[in-house]
Amino acid sequence: MGVLKNSKPFKEDNVKAFDEIYHQYSDAVYRNVSKIVRQPVLAEEILQDVFFALWENWDQIDIDNSVGGWLMVVSQNKAISCIRKMVREKVIAQAEIPEIIDEQDETSEDLEIKLNLLYNAIEQLPPRRKEVFTLCKLEGKSYQEASEMMGISVYTVKEHLIAATKVLKEYIQVHGAKNAAWLLYILTHLGK
Image (cartoon, rainbow, N blue to C red; front, side, top):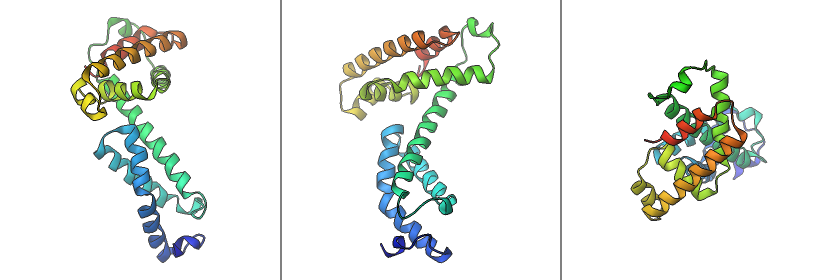
């Protein structure tokens, strides 16, 4: 790794150093992203975004000492942002939101607070339940598809989803926004 030994290579060496870093870390970054988004095409897009961000921030990163950690943190943050965007799009796509919501003036700040509450609730789930919830409710996979992807029975997928939904509803009620009914409705109807 001769190019990496030089701190901050000059322009002609940047491409070589970048290429070495890409080959050294791309598989690990892809696996890191795939664990979160669970969609190969989306994981590949995020991988490209991460390495584009590396190139854009080349001068601010200590390539010799911190590039691996930087790549893992950035890839995780981009994957989580992607999941948040998917949740936001699902929420906005819900056309038949109950009249309770229509009666209130929802600001983008209120919506952001409620979505953050939902994200925080999802983060509290145990890994398998979180995975089932993400696949079925956020990504719209069927129980059968989720069971095949996870290597578990359809019954187990249903049980995880029931338990996850119960935990999320309890979390939302305890930590609730002023309109917990809205979040509970969205939670119940995501992925349908």
